[in-house]
Image (tube, rainbow, N blue to C red; front, side, top):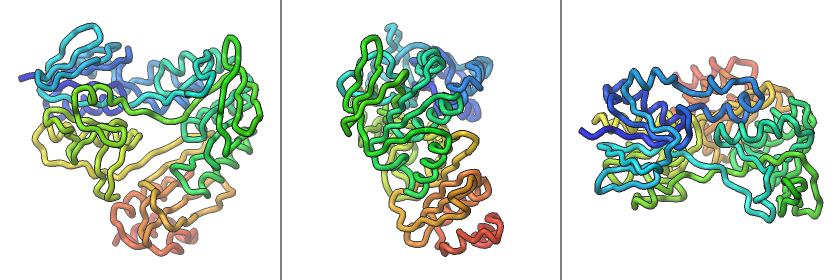
Length: 409
């Protein structure tokens, strides 16, 4: 029997090994990663690892012994360069050919690069891999003025770390508010105030049209005609799924991802795709999507291994996410796209508040800031699909756990 082969080095890859071990399928399996370390926790890169609060040895999700005990063969620091679906072989950069009985692509994505004039200058940094953070660490430590391009989660998390370290931070965001693609204006306003109160300058509705400098990027040229001098540039402008291997092998792609069915199978029945790279249909929301989250990577990994083991499980897990900025944790349940009503529970001018998203009276998502009970209960309420009066959600005279228990009864 040919081995099960995993290509990837993040949360999905680590979970695949765990799930294979639980099913008795790990012995003899192979894990290939183009990074030279064990699968590790990427979310910490823009937070604790950048801040220096988390040492490198604590990044791996599992220790070497776990892979050894499971009988997993590791090819670290080796990029998978070719996939022959007829021969069922993956070729590595060093020419090694690895045969598979089942192949799982957990290839994730890569940071989207700047393309404006001057974007090839040294001193422009991205946040996707441990190497990205390591390569910017000395410059980050020595910099006083830091320009962050992009007001998404990565940009805001880096801004929080930099601000706490005493840096002068400016965020440049092309949209008219931060987090514009993923949260309501009320949530954007909360985070704008949070960062501005910490001394961060946020410039929205502004694009970087060029970068100038001699030995490195020293000045940002902006779309409003102004210029911003900086010691360090960090760009967080999105992720490009790593579909190259699948594309050259002829697997079906869709909307930038690898198309998979409810069991995470690709157009080739012997190949699965999970995590950031997978394009799939979510039954709860009734539409296709690609999700960049630890939850999605882990749960799809479990689904793929179940399919390989012959179990009938399908992927239907509720999406959830988190973001740590300063001393506040944002926990997100569900997906807010398509909402028609926003309900606020708590004081948005304080430091503990929940925002609930309704569509046709049903809860579809919640953004909970320092509100663990609301987050936990919201996941159950979203899955239940019941109609909930807005005034019930906003009623702070009753504990939210009590409200949810009553609604779910």
